Amino acid sequence: MDKISIFKSNSDKFYIFLKKHKTIVEANLKKNFISIKSEEEPFLTLDKKNINNNELEQIETFIWMIKYGFNKVRGGKYMNNNLSLKEFEEIRILIKSNLKLINTYVINTDWESDLNKCIETEKKRHINTTCFMCCKKGHFAIDCKEDDSINIINVKKKHKIHKIHKIHK
Ligand SMILES: [Zn+2]
Image (cartoon, rainbow, N blue to C red; front, side, top):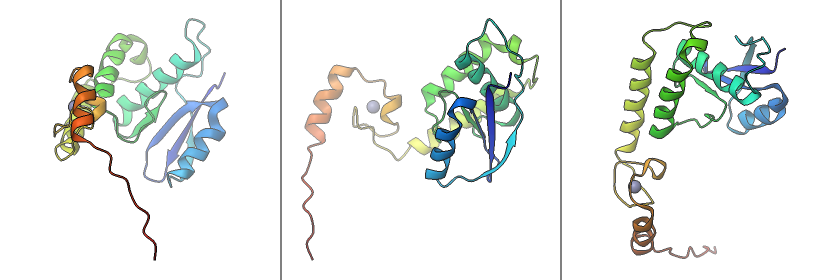
């Protein structure tokens, strides 16, 4: 049962997805100017009865992330080019709870240090950004820890929408 497809891009990044989504993934990669270099074989080829398709796709993604690095692989619900800090922490928890299964395909005892490196890279990217939820510097809205009720007030106060007038020549 080969339900999973894997694309390797020209920049040696791997994209893991369910075979039925192939056309969509191909279109999305093209839209983002990513060209496909080759197609790879998945580790999980067995039809595991106690695992559904989404889990299968996610576990496959984790295997490749552990093998090739957390910023070298995208798949399942982690398709964004830049994963958020929350997503990286979620990945850590999910890998730990599925480590026994993952270890039957790949063993890399150092995976957490790569994950931590990716988190540090992402934090550096945050330094100069302003969160549009709380308007504080240093993180993106997706990683905002401020209370929701405060957010709305702050956004209204600080981020008044200015109308953009069309420039006529
Ligand atoms: Zn914030």
